[in-house]
Length: 451
Ligand SMILES: C[S@@+](CC[C@H](N)C(=O)[O-])C[C@H]1O[C@@H](n2cnc3c(N)ncnc32)[C@H](O)[C@@H]1O
Image (cartoon, rainbow, N blue to C red):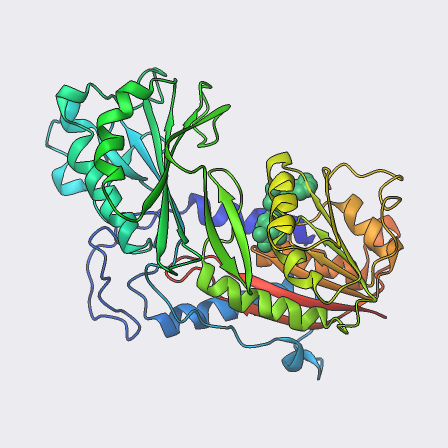
C-alpha cells in the first residue's frame, strides 16, 4: 500500500471507531487512577489512566511500526536497533504546558448520567475544553492539571466571575454566530530577573468592547503573576483564537521565556514550544544531531523556523543561519529574538515552503546542515525534491507526527519510484521524545546523512 494511503486508512480507522466501555472485568496491569476529575471525558489527556511507562512503551512501539511500515526500513537490517533510539521520557508529567486555550460556549457538555438535566441560558454556558468529537459542546473545566498553578488561579478567577449577570457577558454561539467571549488563552512564561512565572491572559472576543472586560481585567490583574492581559478581536465566523486586531488591556504585550540560555519574547499569537522543560531536552538533541563543529564555518538552513528558536540556539556555533517560515508575525518575532540575544549571524525570511519554485535556494549559500521542523502534514513533495537536489551533508528532521515523518524519510532515503526520484540520504538515527505526557502526541528527531 502507498504510504499516504496507509496513513489515510489509519486516520479513517481511528476517527470512525467509537468504543464504549461496558464493564471492567479485571483492571489491566497498566491501569492507574487518573488524577484529573475530567480525564474520562476530556479530549486533552486521552491516556491519563495508563501508567506512564505503558504510555512510553506504546509511543515507542508506534514510531517503530511506522518506521518499518511507512518508512520501509527493515527491522531485519542489523543496523535497525542502532538507528531506533529509545524514547526520551518527560520528567515533568503534569503542569508542563505553557499554553492552554479554553473556549467559551453556550452548550455545556454533560456526561450521559446527567443528560436528563435540562439546562437553560446561563446554566448551559461553559468555559473549558471541547468535548471529543464536538465543535459546539464544551466540557466545563475549573482546573487543568497540564497547565501551571498560576494559570489555574486565573482560570478559577474567570470561572468565578464571568457568568455574573451584572457583567452582561455572553459566550459566543458557534451556530448563531452571536455572543461576545470566544476563547481564554493562558500562557505561562518566566520573569528573567526573578525566575518566577509570569503570565499572559488573552481574551479572544467577537468584537472590541474593552469596557465589558474591565471587571474581569480588574480581578485578574490582582493575581501577582499576571503581567499581561491581551484582547484579540476575531470578528470572523471561524472560531480560531487569532484575532485580526490585538489590544493590550493590562501590562505588557509579551511575556518572556528562556531556552538553552537564550531569552525569547512571546506575543499572544507567536508559536513557542508548549512544553518548555522538555523543549530544553529536545533542542539539546537537535544540537547534538546537528553536530556543528563550533568554529563558525558552517551554514545552517532552518526550515519551518517559527520564531527562530532552533536556529538561534545553533547560531553561536554556526557561520550563518537562514530561517524560513510562513507566518509573518513569527518571522518578526525571530528578528526581535535575534536582536534581544545579541545574535547577528541569522537571516529569517517569510515564505511558504509548500509553494517553492526554482528560485528557492537563490537567497542563501549551500547549507552544511538543514534543520526541518514542519507541522503535522510534514514536508511537501516540492521541498523533498529541493532537498534531494540540494544535497546538504546533513538533515536533522524534527517532527511532531511520526506518520508523515516516516513517509518523508522514506522519500529522502529511498526516493519515489513512480516519480523516478532517487533518494540520497541514509537514516542514522531516529529518536522519539515525549513532549506531551498523557496525550497520543510524539515528537521525533531524525538524523539523515548524505550517502
Ligand atoms: C512545529 S512548528 C516549528 C517551529 C520552530 N521550529 C520551533 O521549534 O519553535 C512548525 C512551523 O512551521 C510553520 N509552517 C507551517 N506551514 C508552513 C509552510 N507551508 N511554509 C513555511 N512555514 C510553515 C508554522 O507556522 C510553524 O511555525
